[in-house]
Image (tube, rainbow, N blue to C red):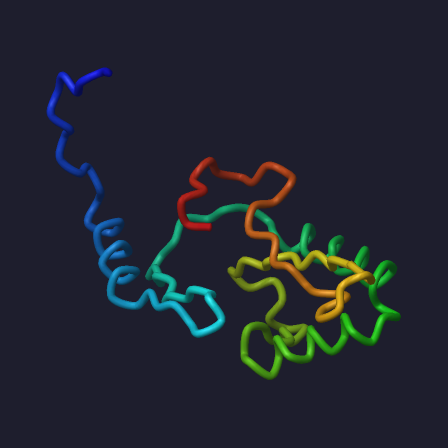
Length: 136
């Protein structure tokens, strides 16, 4: 067996990271169905992470082709709207300083519960303008 030869160093988290950990510890909960939820931290001024609109728009158009005609997919998106998990952005606000999360349509027709479901893609497949991904 190996033994630990050095004492682990104290946490090197920033004040912002410490706050996020504290918020997680205070709000995490397990639901009766076994799922977990917590409140996500909000930042007053997160760093710019690039142009996500083009990527989200391209993914939307792909989903329209792939899933747009499936009523299950549209019902799932309607549920997202009803639960305030997403919103329709007015045309005059689209180019404001915002980050858009692309949605990937996942189809599993053999499923007995959810044949089609939208999944938010937090980490994109293409590089962003900055290397700071800790805010995504």
